[in-house]
Image: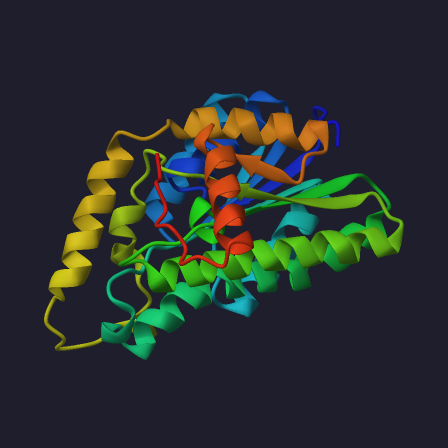
Length: 281
């Protein structure tokens, strides 16, 4: 899809990290933007930044794990701008640690945001995109952790594998319609974001009151925070995403190691070997 000035972008998780970079890239491309995030102060800051870039933009506080919130987001986008051409489902959280030590609240939080958030967006936006008869595209943010695996990240990797599968199925379904609506999946590796502290936004219904901090969780979150601090800048990711959308690419990797890791995984599968742990960069 060719991105043109005046088109409309909706970006979830726009308060920081990749989401904010995507929203700002949309502004620099002359798009009108609907920014969504669960953190109101960060969302307000993003909308102000978009205004400084000369973009028409609104902010809609959204918890993507709640279907009604995402439906309200779609309503707001169409009421304000009358169309959605680019939908970036980027909101996500990290939930890690040893799988058997995680509570159902841990699992439901990861799946509720990282998978249910995508399902809610598909249900809220796709029917209107198809009805509009105008070019539109959906980018779902998954992760290299949706293609390769490792220890201490079971809930996160599981949710991201599901995000990849959902996006592949969505792309197939969209092709059956014959309409000009398409989808891509973003599979970032280590990016300089604050995902390692995403527990700050954990919804009340998924908080384990009285539970002591788990050493395995503290370990992996500290390791993730240190690793992502040296990662790629979100602004670089946004450029890759917009280039991929215009090129019509389905897969949107961020680091060159993507190709080696995919080949290694396929070799393990062909040879029936135990999967090698992810080597994220």
